Length: 447
Length: 142
Image (cartoon, rainbow over all chains, first blue to last red; front, side, top):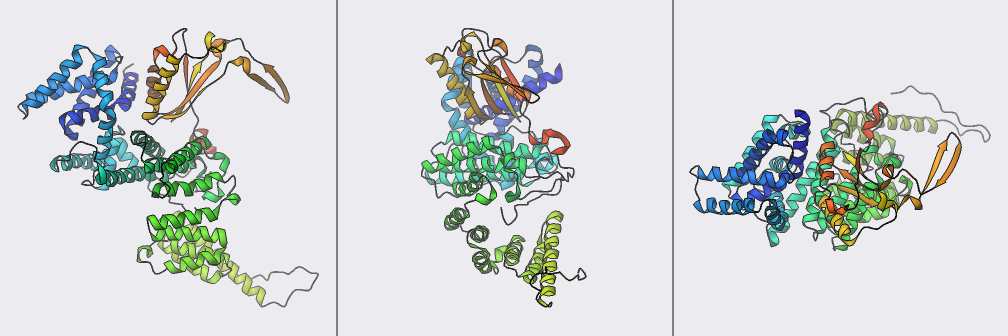
């Protein structure tokens, strides 16, 4: 049936497209052109394979087809006669002894080619959104509609983003290669950032809200694993995979029956994907054995691993989490990290210790509009019995909160503080209860 | 999506015949391909059913039956768990299992989709699906 054949070809495309584009990009030295040629090969496959069936070596078939298109393209009055001859030679070699030679050639360079493709898709000359879109397109094999759905952005916007990205790379004459030395370190950081952006896009959204959101987490994870396989000596690549695996392991437990989010400490840990946790801990271990203990992703992975290692919320090693945040604060200083450290300290040493740290952050310009700062203060004040102050902070946090559900939760907590403050004020004005009778709360009108 | 990809047993696997070095190398290379593609979540071989047992549950009654079991074709010799985008992708990868890894007898691979939390219907699926609202509920405690 025609539609079945299409689904099969889609599956083959998903397996082969990144390598195909990468190999072509090495030859024609232009990522945009490489993708066009690859798309041509896909069109040819969609035309032929429903009748002939999927060939035994679909990757080789696609590559040979794309190369023929490339030669046509260059024959049509483009520059470089040299390029024509080179491609013609490669095509002759390929067709002379059919698939085996082609595959051998691919295997030698394919790791490098794929890595070059990853690096170029995440090139700093592109905007972050462009890097994300291009990565999902060239490496994930996602179609424009799929990317648009995933980011809740209109299709033409994504299409334009990708077109402009390719043009920018072309105009900047970005070389198709794996950078070396200091450039490699900087560019790798950009790649990791792009992957984590994709992951967070899927993770921060409600799981199950839209079928593409968990898909984004899966895609980021898949690309992360591919990257870690290509640069196995890079601890932060493993650190990022560890972070994503362990965070993703909690997706099944994050939502309640009404779609309300469940906080980490309240989640049913039996619903965490423990196989995935295992993979994450293994990846973290690799990062540490490579000496990457102070890498930001490894540190974040280690923090989230502390939760994964606790059978119950009560067994969480908060002191360790606090000290990891302290190291993260040295390596990648940020007021948000310090805030998280404060909350961990509060869990380990009591709310007063945490409040001391939070109070120092109150004037931070970067946190001025960040609702979690007053939210954190409110939580700690409340635990210290300072309900009036806590109520004020919860209201401040609610005013800053980004979405209705959070606002509602914070407002409810403010009201809860008001109730507690009133109850205590009421008790303070009563005579002390007689020894054997239980104290009765006076009834007071609710505010 | 996740799929469990099951290698059905055959006479050799049930006889406890271990794979040759060549077969192990080929399988190892295939697993490496899966790993490089970022889709390999688990891969295990299972020992012959002669070393295993069955526990039959019938109401409160429990019956233990020792292996080996006779219906070779229905037994399992190993499994993978793969993370792929579609059933067709799982099938496509299964077709790439190297032929020389199972030279002696015909081998069947069965592909079964793993249930995800969402698949369990209304009990697990949130009612409110507001696509515009992004819920960043990493609350203070997370």
